Image (cartoon, rainbow, N blue to C red; front, side, top):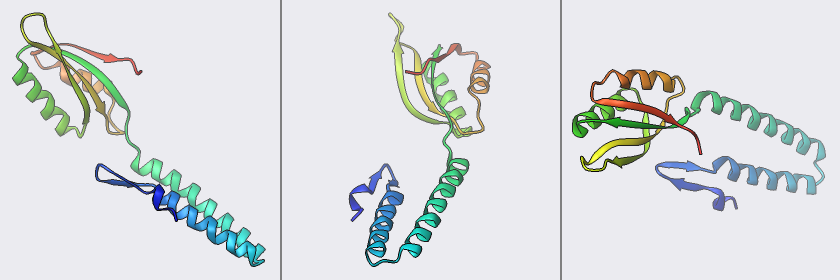
Length: 145
């Protein structure tokens, strides 16, 4: 029971709380069936309080930053992409997706990055830092879909 709610994806496991809550509800049902109403209500109250407080704790501690899309136009592809990748790695910015933009005749002219920023990072600071590179011609934050 509850095994169908546990999902393993990309090195992380999700659904453990849901599976444990299913077991809790089953145990509460059994205890109510045996007539232990006061114990059941007390256990339910305690478990709800624990779940609510753990959710708040999880949001504060493990909150992912914003996901943003940024379009960069540049010259000298290899040097610029290496600079951008190094910058993202040093700032703990996770690249979720990257699409190259092709120019008419000169090959790649830019990229669209989908980034997951750390909680303490602001996209305006990232844009300002990247704009100091002489090979980056234009930076735009794209609107969310």
